[in-house]
Length: 411
Image 1 (tube, helix red, strand yellow):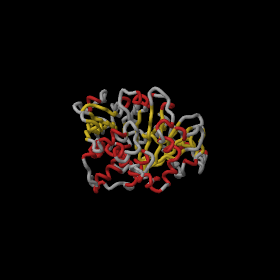
Image 2 (cartoon, rainbow, N blue to C red):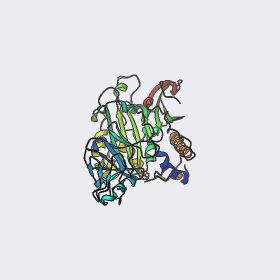
Image 3 (tube, one colour):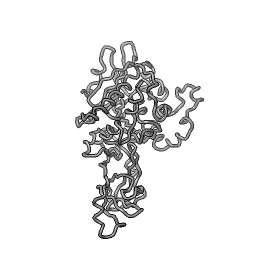
Image 4 (cartoon, rainbow, N blue to C red):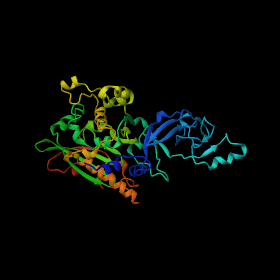
């Protein structure tokens, strides 16, 4: 369990909160690039309890600014998208794509220089993997993470955008908890992974802290001298590199795409979860990961309108464990069922929650370091994003998962 005070520090994301200040040291994905049309309507973006608009200028370049016009705070979602920037429809003020107010036509001709005295902030923005990313922390932005998917053509990536009505932490904690795979997902995991997940429903956790986060290893007994260890890589503050559901060295292992998940806090009680798939050598088709991408990209809002996200009790009676026909929907429904912000002071954690408990300590320690002027874990320039990969490893009982998972990025 966690104290109420620590739970507040862990979950609140506003600009004047300890957790919010830590999160603002990082880049976040906010939109799919297809949402921005050159010269088209600005798109509202909510991030870390603040409001912005993103837009693509007529020349194709990106802009990201505060939503409220600095004049009278009218929404720039309504603005005209012109060559010079966003022109507020209220009084015609223009906020430049590169920041600052460049025109104030409602002022007399002798007052035009007034525009240069009005602060209007522009935020760093870039495109990667079919997503628009931004940094809203102020000052010089940190180096953009050297993700492996940043180095492949966009047709070799797939993304899905998932809306969650709860705090970001409870969705993140679900991703680093491999124990639930044997229960919640027992009817929906892949045929390759399912026998291993069900063979031992109580995995032994071994969590190893790294300078950027942690290795989360969950080992299951799958035979007299056979073990399966699922190593999820967690990178601060909110990335999980998910193991591929096939044995290393097999044709299927090489065929399967890599997979990373990140939970982006919209505010204290709303989250966007981004699922990013990529393959280093071939294009990806939306249907190749089963029903996941069509459901999340095209039909998720319809699923959300169904009571309990479409849980089917008849299906459960017929043998399906959860009664929910999509793995990602299973994750979302349990996270949202905890409430907007779960009361962690009422929990009773077991050994299967080792990774969850370690994450909380890492994040709270990072908040403390940030408050004391120390570079927090995962906030430096030395995180080897491009080399990090989740791993599923078959190995004898006598062989440590660290040796079997080579090459493993070590601290």
